Length: 369
Ligand SMILES: Cc1ncc(COP(=O)(O)O)c(C=O)c1O
Image 1 (cartoon, rainbow, N blue to C red):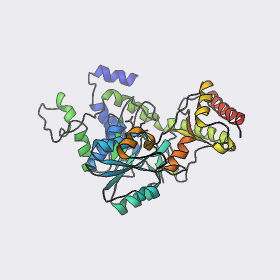
Image 2: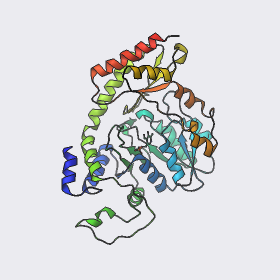
Image 3: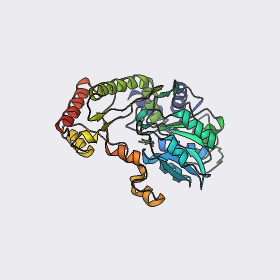
C-alpha cells in the first residue's frame, strides 16, 4: 500500500521508472537477459507469438487442458490453434501426441506448466529442433518454478508470465515476457506500446521528446507504474510465498496419499513446482460420489474449490470453429471429470489446512464404494 501511495504521490501513474525497475528486478530474479512488462499474460503470449513471426495460415500446438487465453491469442494472428492431449500424470502437454499433430504448417508449440509443475522441456526442445518449431512457454502458473535447476523463464526463446489476481505474484492484472534474444525484446518493447520506437513512454517526461515515430501497428499492452510498485514488493516475497505453498501441498499430500479413494498430484524428479494449484483427483471406482457433488459437499462446509480446466475442445467456440468433439482428447477428458483444485495460498492458517483435510477425508469416507 505504501509503495502504491508513493507512485500516486509521484504524479507518474502509467508506465515509467517503476515499470523499468520491476523489469530489471524480475530479469535478475529469473536469471534472464530481458524482461518486458505488459498488461496481462494474454498480452505476453500474443506479443511473443507475434515476435516469433506466427501469422495467417500457421498452426500452433496448444494443450487442451489450459485456459482459453493460451489458444485464443493464436487466432489474434490469423493462425490456428491445434489442440494436443495431455499426460495423465502431470496434465502437461503430451509430447508424443504433439508430434502426431505436426503438419507442414506447424510453426510453434506453447507448453503450459500446469498448476506450476514444469513440462518435460528436454523432450519438447528435442521435438521443436527436429521439426523447426518456436517454443513459447505459458508460465502463467509457474513463478517461481524450475526444471533441472534452471528457472522457468530461462529455458526457451520466449516465456510468458501472469500477475493476475489469483496468481503466485500479483499486480491485480499484469504480465511479463522473458527472453535472451535482443531482437525479440526490441520487437516486443515496440509492439506493446503502439509500435512506437524505443522509449515511447518517455515522450511526456522532461527527459523525453515530443517527437516519435510509429514503426508498426502495435498494441496498447503496457504495464502501469501502480502495478509495477505492487510487483516489486511482491517479488521480494516470491520465494517465501512459494515456501508456504510447498508446505501446504506437503500437508495435503501426506493426508491423502494413503487413502485409496484420493490421488494427490505427483511431482516428477528434477523439477520444482510453484504450487500455484493443488489439483486433487478422485479415484471414481472407489467412490459413490462424483466430482461435482464432492465440490458441493465441500462448499456446504464453507470450502471454496475450482476446476482446472474444462478442456478447450469441450467449449462451443473451439467445437464450432475448429470442429473438435467430445472424445477427441480422452486423457484430458477423463482427468477433467475427476479433478478439483483445493485452497492453497500463502497466509493459509494451520487450522484452515486441517479444516480442508478433515472435510476432504470425511466426504471420501462417507461415500466409499
Ligand atoms: C494457463 C494460463 N495461461 C494464460 C492465462 C492468462 O493470464 P492473464 O489473465 O494474465 O491474461 C491464464 C489465466 O488464468 C492461465 O491460467
